[in-house]
Each structure stands twice: as C-alpha cells, then as structure tokens.
Amino acid sequence: MERRVFKEALPPAYRIAYIIVAVLCVLCAWLKLMALAIPTAVLLLLITDKLIRGEYILESQVIIMRRGRFLRDKAVLITSIESVSKVSGTRRMLGNVSLTAGGRRLTINPENPDSFVECLTRRMDGLRTEARHRRTNDDETTFIRQDHEI
Image (cartoon, rainbow, N blue to C red; front, side, top):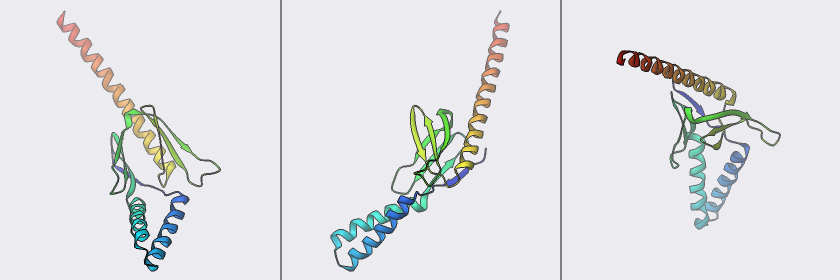
C-alpha cells in the first residue's frame, strides 16, 4: 500500500497562542527584558516547529505521528486500532479524529479528517482481510499436513 501523509491542523487556540507569544517575545526584546525574552523565544520556536513539522503518516501497517523535531514520534500499529471516529462538536471549530488503540484513546487533528478516516478504515479492512486469508491458508496447510502424517 502507498504511504499517505496528512498535515496536522492546528486548533484556533494554538494560533492565538502563537500570536500572543510572538508579540510578547518582541515586546520583551524591545524593552530589553532578556530574562523573559529568551524563554518566550524558545516557546515560540517550539510552537513554530509543531506548526511546520506536525504530520500523520499512514504506512502499510503503522501510523506515525510526527509532532515536531523536538518531540518524539509516536507509532501506533493499525492492527491494534479498535475504533476510529470523527469527532465534532459545538465548542470545536476543527474536526478531530478519535482512535481507540490498546485500550487507550488518542485524539488527533489531521487537516482533512474525512479523508484520513476513510484511508485509515480502508487500511484496517485490508489488513483484517489479509489476516483472515492468511489464517484460512494456514488452516488448510495444517489440514493437509495432518492427512500426510496418517
């Protein structure tokens, strides 16, 4: 299967925080308050990194969640995913995707949640049918081996 990459969509709260931190950083540097300017510049760097490099990569059997250069990537096996659903509500202006994998719930924000859910469910169905087909082939070869042993 092909590799699909989905960019991470940032919620409006992240965008507002980005603007506030940028203004605060410039203001602190302008007023020569370096004790405040340096930490806000680091925070601005982290938010910018997440903004640029945040993405979800659908491989053939795993989802890789890249959260930026400074945070570790997270990988989830597609076979361990129990349910996928698109979550939307009145408070959220952005469509989120909820994954349940291994008893844990993950909420992710791809830019195109409908396409992400469709692609992920196709991969999950493909892996399930492949595993079912492999299981029936293993049962047939076991049955044939038992016939030859008698």
